[in-house]
Amino acid sequence: MRVTTYSSIRPFLLSIVVMIVSIGIAQATAPDDEHLKRHGGPTESQPQGHADPDLLPLWAALASKVSGPVSVSWSHLWGTPKAVYGILSKATGDSETAAREFLSSQAALFKLDAALTGFSLASSRETPMGRVYVFSQRPDGVPVYGGELKIHFDRAGHVVGLTNTTVPTAKLPMVFPSLKPEQAIQTAYGQIPPGLSDKEEPVEGPRPSAKLVIYGNTGTPALAWEVVIPTSGPTWQVFVHAQTGRALAPAQDLNRYATGTGQVFLVNAIVATRDNNLSDQADAASAVPQSAYRSVTLAGLDGNGFLDGTYASSSASKRRVSSASQTFVFDRNSDGFSETMGYYYLDYAQRYIQSLGFSNVNNRQQVFSIDRYKKDNSFYQSSTKRITYGTGGVDDAEDADVVWHEYGHSILDNQVPGYGTTLEADSIGEGFGDYWAGTLGAQLSGGFQDVCLAEWDATSYSSATPPCLRRLDGTKHYPESIVGEVHDDGEIWSAALWQIRAALGATNADKVILQHHFLLTPDTSFNQAANALVIAAIGLDYPLSQVNTIRTIFRNRGFTVML
Ligand SMILES: [Ca+2]
Ligand SMILES: [Ca+2]
Ligand SMILES: [Ca+2]
Ligand SMILES: [Zn+2]
Image 1 (cartoon, rainbow, N blue to C red):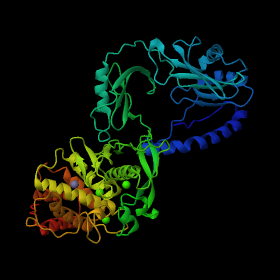
Image 2: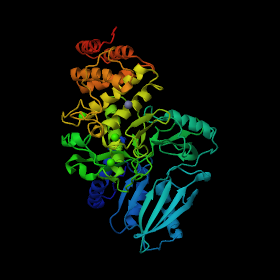
Image 3: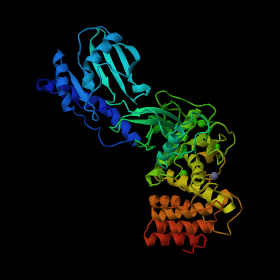
Image 4: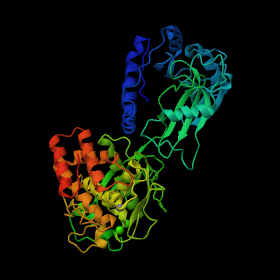
């Protein structure tokens, strides 16, 4: 948001000013565009500021005293100068007194009174260029949100910069709120966009806060509560009118997300190399060729140097890797590799869900661990909403199929709270997890062995060729194939889903499968789920031919489809 516009009332300065503009914008916009894309933030360009015509004589007076070139950008709200750069004064020395005197002489240009009432020195700081004095705006002792005047001196004691984010007419007739801070916090909770954050207060960590400010960004200064609500994901900031209780602007996420670089297997070591003969060799780096690794972009990182982000966090792990430059490049012998695999593929899965149009399917930070459980197993725990990836045999998080299977349980628990109270419901849960791993893996595998799940993890325990944890192309039939073990029985369901995928295409299948979960109960049966999936396809306006195909596939599996 640093795109500034420059203008000048003195035509002879224009060419110099324009030159400054083009350099300024070229340098300033690139990182900001990136920033906005990552946030999905405002797409319209920054409003253009123009001088309030009444101020032009004052500006001309200042500009005429400046010997060299000068640039100015104007506040789009107030028409006052937002930033003035140039050699703006004689060498007066860099004292607070000199700063105040200069500001006082220009106060009218900022629509402030010459006495600078309500301004106090907040800080002064030495930099290689010189010294900056920061005056904060606090009429009647209430801070104006963001309201500052900064005056920048060079080493020789010239004023070379003046930056102004003050609010004219910020002095209000009354600075006593009629709204209590708790009421403001309640209002603020109602402003959090649905689906973008669970509205639960965090179990640990900072509590919501409310601070009284004068808020001018609407163009009409008002007494407001600045409410900040930290969550496990975004940190929301909402301004609530302290008299009317109205929210003054949409909730803003104060977090600044970072993009990192990571190294992962493309799904897993076997899919990446198409070599079914690889084996763990006690977690040796040399067991897997370098060609199995891919460099990837890690999106949505909080920027704290850990693998903490919007949709995934390795924070349940015992020992964690960190990188100030957000670079997570490890070979498989390091547990940092497991952390990176977990982060990347969980984030990948949630972004895919959202690309299908679901903003409320497990849209949260999935916390996981990769070094807490030594058995060759992984699990999702509904009480903590966390995933634990075991380290037995091949580290489970080294195989994206395992990463995604467990996320499948998390998805179902999120869509149907308390999901899985019966054998058939749990079997559907396992079957969906397998399907989910298969359909995501197929996006990356180039068609290699998609019906064989977790072939890398399975090298530790499967003697089949290729080794597979489970398969998606089984012929199990309801009810006679039921054995009472949820993973085995889940293959009835996953095979039906995989056939639906083959018939409808991945996107339509994935979408209707996620959609039908909303129709399920925690104790759903195969037949109930099959009928739910049919009505979901009808509800999504899928063509009759596709709905009929779903009916046929389910009936051929032995399910009773009534719809
Ligand atoms: Ca490992
Ligand atoms: Ca394993
Ligand atoms: Ca596979
Ligand atoms: Zn499972």
